[in-house]
Image (cartoon, rainbow, N blue to C red; front, side, top):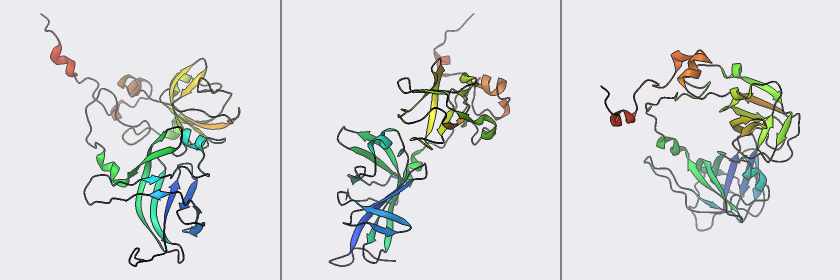
Amino acid sequence: MRVFFDRELDNVATFWRVFRRDGVTLGFTSHDRDLYFSGIVHQSAPGMVPSAIRRTINVDDDDAEVEGALSHDSIRADELATGLYDAASIEIGAVDWEALDHHVFYNGKLGTIEDDNHSFSAQLKSAKAILEEDLVPRTSPTCRAEFCGKGCSLSAATFTSLRSVSALDLDANSVQFPGITMDDFIDGQLRFLDGPQTGLTFGIVASGAEGLTLDRPLVAGTAVGTMVELREGCDHTFASCQGRFGNAENFRGEPFLPGNDLLARYGKS
């Protein structure tokens, strides 16, 4: 393997790659011309200034920052604002710009993206971030399992359908579909199959006369008639699990466990 920085003068440039969840891949390099390796064209981005990358053997998250990383012309502000880069996978490494030998030093995901009206910045989370998650189940009156996920046992295909958008309201951030029971889709998911937000998953937070209200902003350009993948939701209560889905045997919660307020209750004669 190529050893970098083992000589006084070295042909080394940094590179970084973004793998969005909708399948789009972008590559950049600090070199003054584009570089092609690993099947990806890495566009020249001399303004990208990487800081030190700290890697440790303990469970603390590894640190990495890239100043100007989200300011390249190919990364559009509207795509950042609408969430196309949320949780995108990131690779950062070094490349010999003559021989194109390269090595990845950092793997992670984009965290929270912030806009200060001048530029976008994002926290980078390494693969160690999963070690910070609490993996021990806590008692709760509601179900802890993801709907149609592990522990739930229900089939996602049963509760997912393809629908055509009949109307959109950008001000209300809502969409409408004919012939559906809208309340069944609260806490569900919607994924556009066409348009400027193709592949982006939206959460459904409410329903009403204006349609299904989404948890992230809609952008102009999505046409009426656009096809979406629509999945029903679950409120994670025992009543819904038993009555609506007939899945009480897989309920991952403790609906009859007394809460902390039991200690403050007055005794009754």
